[in-house]
Picture 1 (tube, rainbow, N blue to C red):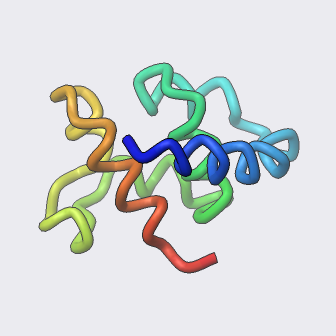
Picture 2: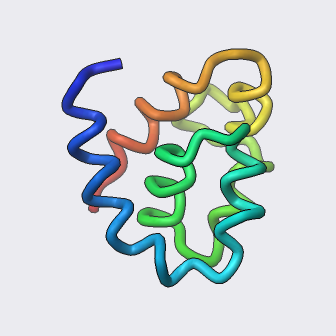
Amino acid sequence: MDPRWNTFAAVCRRDFGACTFASELVRECGGNEDIAWATYFHLRDDALAWLQRSVPALDGSVPKALIEAGHPDTVRDCLWSMPC
């Protein structure tokens, strides 16, 4: 992963304190807090649902399935490419 991801994730983390389902989101992100932060940053209350659905930017793959299959960087790249 590009080292600039850590800077981006740190910015996303600032908003994570407002997440009322933070523990569940981190768990659904396979324990990857940085992915949870970025997912919440971009999708807010839709974050958990996004992890479970087919995403066109991921060639139709489901983010949670990619994470579970050992491809969290693919999900990170997708989140990083989303407009703010």
